[in-house]
Length: 249
Image (tube, rainbow, N blue to C red; front, side, top):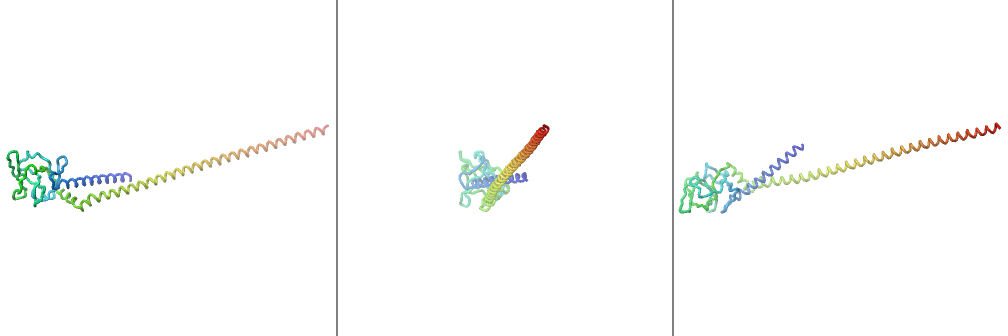
């Protein structure tokens, strides 16, 4: 039973850490995919959620892709890059393949195109627009992260497990407190029972000693009575001998 309880506690701890890591990944992914000039990364790598099929079949909507920071001077035609651009009159991040590179002195500009698109992207980008280079994809994980990005997903996957774990910890603390009080009460009862047994043993010893003393006193009184009787008998015999002696005179 104890082993089963210990195993359950370990499993719960593993689940908790998984939830914490998932929450961290959720927070990081949300931050990473924000439409900002700088994109957060871990050791140079950034996860991103694919929101269209413009690069199918290389990766599809609902996939998660990993990009890494890169040296733009080493990029070549055919590489897949993530860059800042304008989509539907809003600043956004996009991930497409480099179709061509134009160089004017030290300045480079890039024309990009989605593998599943018929025409090239409208906006020409420069080195400063590039966030990173595509590394790999994780099929379908983007849907999971999109669900986590919703209020309901965050509540179900992050908040609810943490709340349940907190309730369990409070329950566990209460049970530990109750068991501790029971153990202390049992220990006190045991000590009281032991003290009672010791007291009863001392009383029994005292009564036994008293009985032995009473028996010794009675024996002494008996011996005294026998001695007095013998003394009286000897006195009577002496008086009788003296009376006989007087008679003989």
